[in-house]
Image (cartoon, rainbow, N blue to C red):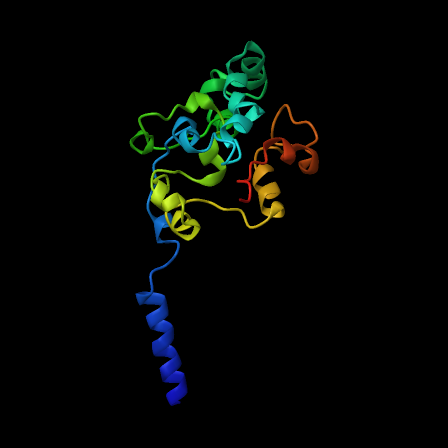
Length: 186
């Protein structure tokens, strides 16, 4: 009986007194935009993530919605208005489309398409260099780090799927290397 009480007290202490690593996830982080991320993530030492993104379809995802063809598809799907203004289209073509404007940093531009923060989480709280140099601190401040390629693939398929009216078969093993952007090991 004493062991059960001691365990219950210890369990309560862990649950209620030890800081939760996901506390940062409980509050709303602000989106900074790719230009802010790119300041540090453009060098060869960092893996040239900005360049990889700039050369990807993600960087142009919003632009694809600004065409007559996109508006025609939106209309065919029964959407009212232009594709670039449609929630249904924006959910996969633009970061921050559904975020309270108070949570968009001064340099954030939705027109930059599918940005860093779409996959890595809103960066206002993990962007300081001191935090970025500490992976655990970055994650606690909202950085999303994917467990493995299966998790990354599942995330990609939240947009690259049959729900898209222009869907073409998505082969993760072929497509992922085009956007993969690890920091090189030193």
